[in-house]
Length: 294
Image (tube, rainbow, N blue to C red; front, side, top):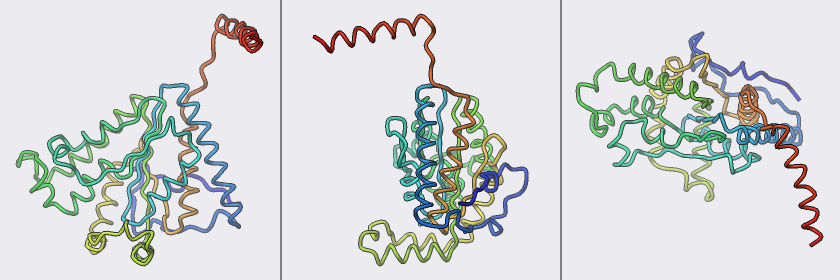
């Protein structure tokens, strides 16, 4: 079993992120399938315990954001990584194309109302970052569909959105909501193989849409948008994690460890009763035992 540091994948804005120099594949952290499963199970158990403590502590919340190109493995990674976490303190939300109602609000609105409560872990499949990815690659969305004044659609719109997002995440941090951001970095070749697999596998081709091919033709534009997005919104307090995504097992181990290590930084504990409360609870033991005899 090979150890690795989450800092190897962390982007804080201190140095420029170059997407074409960012790895899409790493050497295996495990030697056998059994070792992989054992590593992942240990990390799942650790996350479950930490999330249970966060739920009882009831002061922090955690927002995990997953952004990636199509077929990078977001769904499978979320399913595998969070499998062992108690569902009472865990929620998922997948953002699709904005509805008419959502377009009638500011672009943060639909994400803001899905933020985690204190004590809970919320996972976003895509997020407000789509506003500087899809909308940036397809400026016609901004011009023709988003209902903001024309004078606010100029060249400064992207700079302003990056600033809005950084301020928003700072606001969350200052209110006890930790933001953990994942960019699952898949290569064009591997993405192509997975799209072909979706077409050929009857159990997977429901996930395939013809529009995926049109978006794939804009690969370079998306790569530029991801690189700029990460450089403009990565900070020490709210870093990005660029996770190699060509191998799903290694990707899941990296994501799980990043989540566990971030949860461990929260200053939390299980509530401890004062002395009077302890005595009250102890006295109830005899009451319960007596009830068992009745």
